[in-house]
Image (cartoon, rainbow, N blue to C red; front, side, top):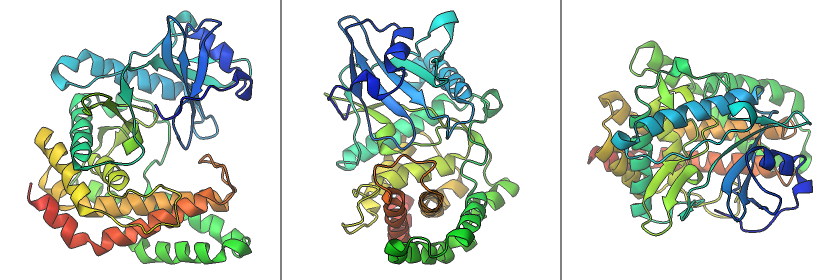
Length: 365
């Protein structure tokens, strides 16, 4: 849990009604959780009830009910095989008519799940032991859903991780917004130079799938550090949370995104600090992963490319959203997404510079 301050239910329309639909009483506390870019998440805490409630962002997920249905299906699948996978999964709560979602009078869709007692999340990796735990947890998740066919899940974000499509969207926006933000010209210029630097690699994953070097599986889709749940006492990583983006994808992309989140200790929007990829953290994550689940030779040989391209992709998405007026990712200041883009592109440069060190650290496994 990252925040312990109460929130006025009136600050989020229908919050109290939504909590009540999942069993909250009148005297419950509403505690905001996390620093997520998309949804609004709260801990609902009362004398006899404690659960996590989330409002699904319909501006991002055009059919929020499908997001809730996917999460419930994956959670149910993992729960059914928990004795084999060793993964914990939060019980999905139901509202009226045994639905795993609730639509309020304003049309917003909510979902809820049981809260894990004595657990915590972190925003950045604290040490190599924690990085190994993260790698092992992601491997356990992939192992647990390996026999869940992606076709059984709804497509909630068409084109997710489609880097050529993201670049096409950027090109379209950039052509109509050139010079629009004079005060940010230097940062925007750096981002545009970064995009020109790496865009020739944009079809790497498309080509790999065409050659059948990789095939689609059910993946998490957003396996960043803050979506890993840790036991507060032992420090063991016990669960993957935030199943918004579960669906068809590449294990290699999932691992690349996890490595991206783990290899830098700088916040996504902190442009004031020096940003560098730490190969030791990459090695620790992969040690934890490979101790649990093997990868193909192609996947092992291309971990660096996956790490670089997922970092580059996120930078493109942040910059495009900034140029569009911050429609996708939540912001508190107008330049948040621009700063996040700068951080990702700086991190990508460090990843590229440390290619040999990263590949050598993984090759030892």
